[in-house]
Length: 454
Image (tube, rainbow, N blue to C red):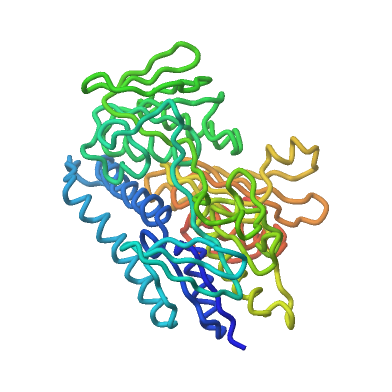
């Protein structure tokens, strides 16, 4: 009998699950209210990285003298930048639509809600509804920027992350509230585009969840670029006073700037899913799932930001594929490897880039775990010298008894690409010897990985 799968939410998890399930013979319907590919992905992740790439091009041209070229002073064309972002987002969205259509997935533009554990109601933009029977249900509705009661974004000078790709104008002075991954990417993005930037840091260093040595390297770069750091300060209000934005902190400090952007996390889009009607357990809006991404009701799954796991598009895509395979019984006749979230690689697209995977040095230290730490600076790399950018380092964490690579951190150019090698080692329990005996291309930055493994 053909399995009827209904997916509510067409982000990375939903698209991945829908296409995989369709290839495996399921009858799939996907319901998405905004854009196939996911609002958080296509309206947050992709445009931010595109703007960072534009800022990177500006920065490169600004230091072109170091490459033996005459210096140039390019200017930003906001209209052209906006067109570039829209083209990328529209093109990716269309490719997702084409992929789903090629697999005969039915796409409904609207919202979805569970009426009960086996019926999903789709509400179209014109208000009409359709009840869709389902054997399996995937909830993957993503998240949206968190906005506290003390902040009222206006889309003009007080911005959420989604108001800033690009903003109405490049700010003369931007205050970034939030020093996590999104916050520091905004700092880098707008300093690269020529803005003066202030950063409200609620802890004693940026990126509180990361290796302190990594955070220090980034802070040093920020200070060198003229960023104003307000450490140990929590914002309590953001208000407009004419053409000025005033951010007040709990320690009495006040930051005045032309614009402010709020980057303090996200909340799940779960309030209208009918979780209680279907009997699905949830906490703080996140669906409670097991290692198969199943909820307490075995035929109802959750993935992506809604699952409360790592809020990464890469993780969501993997969840979607694994869920589809599990739904259709692929685990019954072959080994089924569950997702190990602790082995997921992540990156921060600042300059220099930051990437890590697995166990960190600070985490091992806090657990009293014995590890071997080796570190090689990019200043020893011929390729880094050729690139005229020797910032950063490679750090590997391994088991001193077995040599198995447990994790690693990379700070420097192309860190997001280089971490993939370390992630492969961590995922497959390869040793430092395996890495050290691999012959890499010369000259490349990846050679630094083998040097750290020796």
